[in-house]
Length: 275
Image (tube, rainbow, N blue to C red):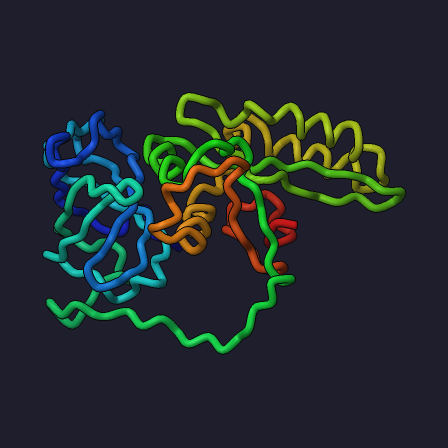
């Protein structure tokens, strides 16, 4: 089971004059984290200790939860410094005070391990890759999307079902970007109506799957299924630093290998991966 907190760190935010944020950071802020021993960047959710907000130039202790834990396995130790960014902009620096997730702990002492990427001799055909548009991101750059997600925005998907004669299929929508000041239930009605119109009549599973999809999109679930962490990983795999600032005329896209699963937050628990 994934630890709720990976490590505790002391954070120092840069001032506006130093190029830092112009507005306060809210607890739950999710900037990019860069460790000195790896070129791979990850997302690090900061839950401030005894603070709700941090002003530019302030220091604070925070609980940090990162993505791609397996990539950094055995790499972290008390005293390790790291940077955190919004896009290419350095927002501040941190020092690890305590490693909570034992999987991340470097038990060999103060030795900075160099993570070697596993060799992969598998040739991936372009036909094996499927593009997914992140709805409501047209006119944004990936860097701007990172900024919005760090403020509390989310990427969500909705469940729905469709019946064809005697067969009923459980499906998920394209991912949607939801701003921090929007509710994820904003587009829920569209997919609930789709299930009610196109899915309920298929017997015997139509009524069952329709109720299941409506429940997945219910207020108890926040109105949608959050896949922000999974999409962040895919964005950082696809978009290099020279591409993150390019404005996209159409929706920003991510890539999945066909047949590969997404995160375990996919609402279709019986079928891994998007279709």
